[in-house]
Image (cartoon, rainbow, N blue to C red; front, side):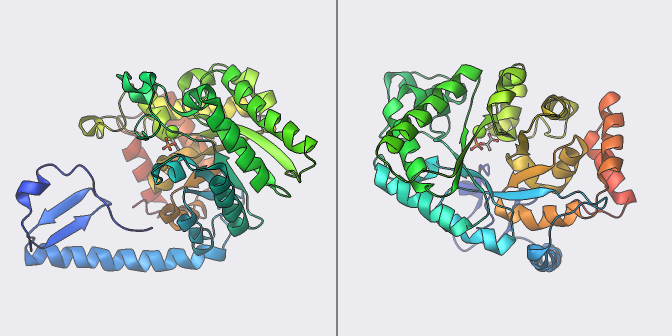
Length: 383
Ligand code: PEP
Ligand code: MG
C-alpha cells in the first residue's frame, strides 16, 4: 500500500508524547522524536528525492524489464487480499508470483466458507486478466496463528516457526485443504491454475497435497463441471532439507519458488521475528547466495520456473546479488516493482554473474560492500 511502517521501536511509548513531531524513515529503520530544524530540512530533501524517484519508477509501468544485455527478467508482485490487486496495473508487474491465501483466513473471525474462498480466487483471476497468478495454499501457524484453528499440537508448539504449520497443518486437517482445493479448481474454470504448496520438507508431502487436488478434480470431472484449462503444481523452497532432494522433485513440478524469508531463518537457525537477531545475519551472505546458486544450478535443464518470492528480491542491492547467482524471476512487494525494473535495465547479467562467482569463490570481508562498489563504478544506485 506504500504506507511507511516501522515495528518494534524500543521505548517508543515512553519517549513519544502526545503532539510530538516525528520523522519516520522506514527505509533506514529510524524514527526521530522532536527533530531539530536542520534534521527536518535534510529529511525533506530526502523525501523530495524519493518522490522524484517514485515518479520515475511509475513511468516504467509499461516498460518491460530487459537487462542491459537483453534478457527479459520476470518481475511479479506478492499479494494476499482483493485490495492488493489494483497494484498489478499500477506497477505493471508481470503477474502475482505469490498470492498468500491465508490472509483471507487471518482477517476473518471464523474459517472462511468454501464459497467465499471461491469468490475471492475468481475475483483475483479476473483482476489479473491474462497475467499469471500463483496461489499458495494456506500457510497458517508459526507467526500466523488463527484463534479458531487450534489443536493440542499448536498449543504445545515451543517453536511454532518449525512446528505444526503450513502444509504440515493442511495435510493433517484434510478438510481444510480439500475445501481450498475445490475452491481453487472451481474458481480457475477456463483458466490456468498455478498452485503452490508452502513449507514442503519432503517430496512425499508434495505428493500428498497434489493427491488432494487430484481427488477434487476427479470429483468435479464426474460432476461434468467446467475445469481449469491447465493445472501447474509448484512448491516453495523454504526448508533447506528439500534442496537435498530436488532431483526427486523436479520431474514432478512445474515451478519452484524460493521463499527467502523462511529459508534464511532456517539456514541461520535465527528466528525471523526475533528483533535481537534482525541485524545479526545478512541476506547478502555467501551462505545464502551459495545456497541459492546451488538450487539454480540443480534446476538447469529442467522445464521448471525458479522464482525468488521472499522480501529479499524487492531490495535493489539484494536483487542485484540474486541476478548474480542466476535468478531471473522475482516476486516482490508491489513497492519494489518499479525500483527493481529500473535496476534490471542497468545490469549486464554476465558481468554481475562473473563478479559474483569471484566473490563466492573467495568471499570479501563484506559482500554487501563489494556489491555497492561494483554498482557505484557503473553508476547504478542501490538505495
Ligand atoms: C518466505 O518465507 O520467503 C515467503 C515468501 O513466505 P512468507 O513470508 O509468507 O512466510
Ligand atoms: Mg514462508
